[in-house]
View 1 (cartoon, rainbow, N blue to C red):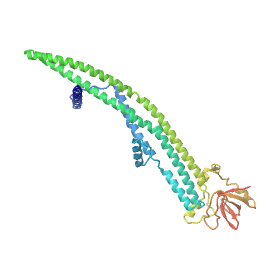
View 2 (cartoon, rainbow, N blue to C red):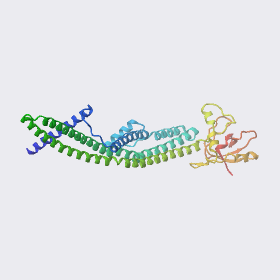
View 3 (cartoon, rainbow, N blue to C red):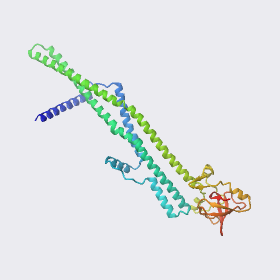
Length: 388
């Protein structure tokens, strides 16, 4: 029974405090009550914390969009995270594209130029997909997790103490208002001393003033204590910025590693595909290539030395066949890449086979005459490595 009485009294006291705060807050909004202003330093700290929270949320959400553009996948990962379960591994877009390319190249035939190129591109896309997966994991661990910990941990604590500070301020201002009203009533009562009843009122209001002054001292002490606690928490925002700066550096380093890997993968792929002559394009359009067709500009930009070796392929300098052109004999040459003849004047080639090549007077400098048994036709010199 005593416990029940205590709970009822506590409930009544809490309800009275809540009502007092509500009245004070309403009167402040209506301009009918004074409001205790926080000191400028504390206001600046509160503003800085709020600004940090807003921008951290925006940066965190947009980073999630950058790393995972699929909104359904982000929702699924969020659900698994809340359930404290590991999300199932799924193939990403570069890996899926790479698999499609490899399957298509296998279907068209690895021995054909297009099929071989598709397989090489597919393998590169899958490597990019692996690098993309590593970027997501590293960024989530070193960048997103610290930001989320601040939003869901440190800032929630700050918001809780800030709300408590607001309540203590309302209690303080309500106590000031009650003291002000009690003093005003005491003054009016002291001016009316003609009746005994009024004398009793003077004593009542004097007691009320004393009680209000004591309440004011208590609320002022609680407000000052809470303001100090809130200030100490808010001053930690500078340390949060320093920590987030280190996390940002980690994120930039992860991106740098990712883009460097992608660049290297594509550079290797370009070295494998960049020397393909434009006859392939002509062949796809069902048109014949002219004898004067030149090597793509990418070769002239990169240079023969820049594409010296990749994935075990060795490309000799295009200047080597000049020695052959100056002589009247023939030489053996190893084929570096598959080549499909664009017309009947050219000879189709298979990678790693050895053929006989010789020069013909008046032939374009980018071509030699190739011979394999009874088959004979023009072959591009960029596909050949002359053998000693």
